[in-house]
Amino acid sequence: MNGAYVHLALNHIPVVAVPVGVLLLLAGLVRKSRELTQAAMVLWVLVALISIAVLKSGGPAAHVIKDLPALSARRSMITRKRAKMPFGEWPHWEDSV
Image (cartoon, rainbow, N blue to C red; front, top):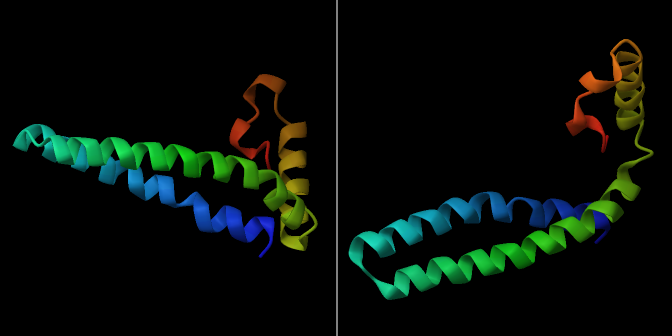
């Protein structure tokens, strides 16, 4: 199991768990159930801990995939596009590519 696998395996958990936590919290508030409200809070704490693991596994994942041919082609395309743009207009989400 390498860094990319761990990162991909954990990366989707917070995306799914946060809306579930919101629904749990809303259900707890509507039903005035302390147990459901506490379950939502516990879920969010677990999501926060998993998010730390996702953050920490991002570097090793980038190291594993950095030399893939498809990624190298995309990186050169982005570099060519950036050469034509003023500095302030660079898309920031592509910085990690």
